[in-house]
Image (cartoon, rainbow, N blue to C red; front, side):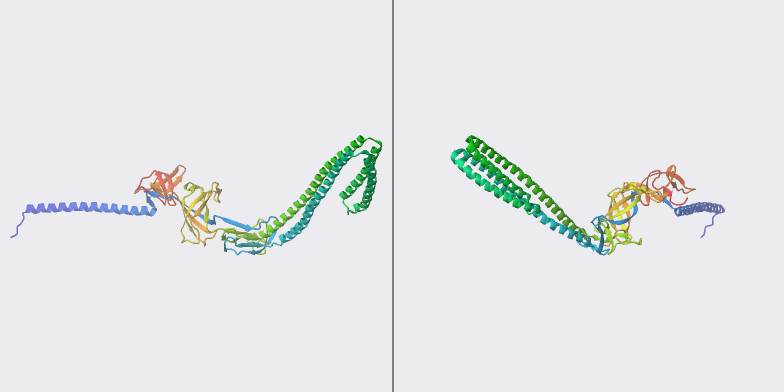
Length: 491
């Protein structure tokens, strides 16, 4: 059986239902408002991301500096004409681009100019060799002759001493008789010496008889005359003077013999010294001729140029008579000192490039470098920063750059000097720092700043202090906090 509510109960129930409906309407309005705000925030955030806002992050930066360089060998040897002051024709030349080993032939020059020089030097050396031998034999002959002459002088002096002793110990009658016999002997000796001297005189002027022989003949003739005079004096002394006078005169003769022997020794020494000097001159001229022969042979040997170390053959460039710039080839003539072939050693390569002055502070010797070659983009190479130039140079845009060299950890036979190398120098990592994109940092006359993005209104400038940087990000030391949003692109 159903129960009927009284009228007052129905009225109270209706009031409560109306109140609940009003509360739900207000809640719906609140929820709708919140939904509208969330939708607006999402739309604004989407608009901010489209403008390029970036949320400041904390993490590790790995500074790097990109550069483009040229691949070059660490060592390169140059070969060409090594004889200065002479123009040589190339008869044979190694093919360009060929890998050669140590000892391989690179260049063959025409040795004809040096062959003529060698023939002349050899003929001169042969002539002087005979002359030097002649002077040496002349020294030996003079030494023998002067030795004989000196012994003769010494013997004469000794003979005078013996004669003096015999005179002292011989009786006067015997001495007188002997003196008479001796006078006759001296007269015959003089005649013979005079005859011999007279016979030599015609041959002296013609050069068949040496002056030395002629002077010797004169000395003998003079000696014969002196002996004759002496013998006659002795005879007179023996006959008309006492024995003491004869002894004193004989003593003087012995002293004269000794003096003549001493003079002969001095003359022998001088003559030998002169002959030896002449022989020395001949020997020196022969040595000079032999040196010229060796020099010509060395020049001929230099006409064949071989590699001292392995490498890739690269021909040098030259200008022909028409002014055309071309490679050196067979048939060309080059002067001494001109490089004809260069052999870069491909076993050890390096990269040379330039770094802007604004990034030089990010580099240090020994830092790692990642390298790729345009010719072989699939080959990843590693290297080390080998050197940083101390003197910069101006570029076309008035900026300055510094040269750097990078050593590669390996090479490849396919690599060639001059290939373009793209490098990235990796610096020391910077731990636990705040960073933003490089493009977010701007500069004016007061320094560096960023545009701090806001959910409401335009972004506002914020002064910052930067530190280490990479190719994309830069450290922010002061001015921002993690989570701050900065404007990267746009006004």
